[in-house]
Length: 90
Image (cartoon, one colour):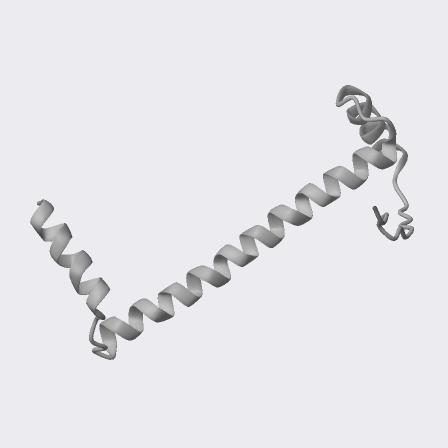
């Protein structure tokens, strides 16, 4: 199995930040301060990317919806069948 290529990241912290991070790292059972910071940063980065991707998808969905509503695009057969099935279920 090929190992991931590693790179280095340096950051300057206040004394208070370092103490807080070390304390949280110990409470969380992390092996090191580095492991804690890397995992926390990765988790936050993944949350931001996921939120951004949802917004992009939402905008694309909005465009599709408004194209159908305002441009008078005719629904396809699958959409018509789903509409009929929904109405029959009521």
